[in-house]
Image (cartoon, rainbow, N blue to C red; front, top):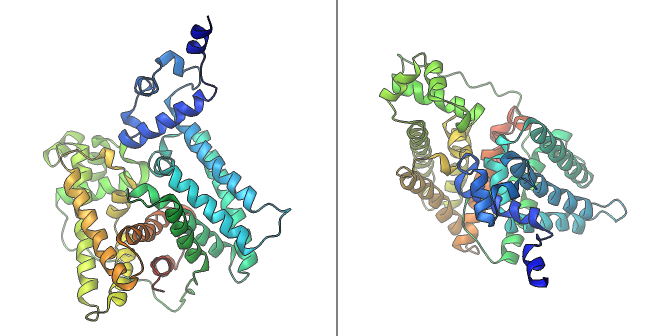
Length: 399
């Protein structure tokens, strides 16, 4: 009897185990690529047994993300406890704790970035409310250390700091845990120390570019699809929606693109072309053998391109699971070639960094720009282009 009862007894932490299994599956296949039976099979249980812990797949995702958020809240509460003397050490303790959690749970950071839109409205609202409250606590501490910062400027720096930690979800480069944690903490501190540029009220807004002629039907479809994907997410847009936005019937879209995934891949290629052209111009116009100037120009070109048409926002906000397998190698090569340009320059400017550290640093800088241009609370700032460029320079250590 003792053997039978121990065999049938459910683990006390079964819910946490299920959440960990689900987190990995969601990261690998995307939310829509995983079913309840997949989750149950990966955990070694039946579908009905999984329902004892979660009402549906959406509840599993909500549990994973809310648990990750709670970990960050606990780290914030512990480091910024009002009963303790607030000091530089307490701020560094907070950043180190958050960095360590990011390194340990890269899967949760990836889910937060790619799959959060699939939560029910109540869970989304709860995450927004709690994350905003947590960032407000960071901002209050930052303003006590830097009283010259306005509320909005302090909030911007805190959002950028959060992006440093979230950047671990967009690449697979790794380091020993302590070294990785120390590097992320150092990059976060650079962000919090950044001196934001003042708004130049004398600068006139750039004129809206005029389009000569009528874009081809293919270009219209790419433009409309990019905008729809940006606003609603890839999974919630149909080919009929894209056709309607471009002024044609849904089935007619298939004359130009065989599938929605093929459309997304074309957007990715066009985004890559825009980036590479801007990078080439930045490097060609830099002084010879001046890697620091070249890196500064490269950062400025990235921000300028990113704040233009929506293709780049789509390319960096849609997970790779939505791309057709035959298109992934090409798009990954384009991205890697682009990042390698940054890494080579950064290694020349910062010879103390090895290649892995340089890659992690570059991804942190790029993620700040990618995230803040998609964050409604800061995307409308009048000086955002100059501010993003300044933050990238700070993270790269070239300010």
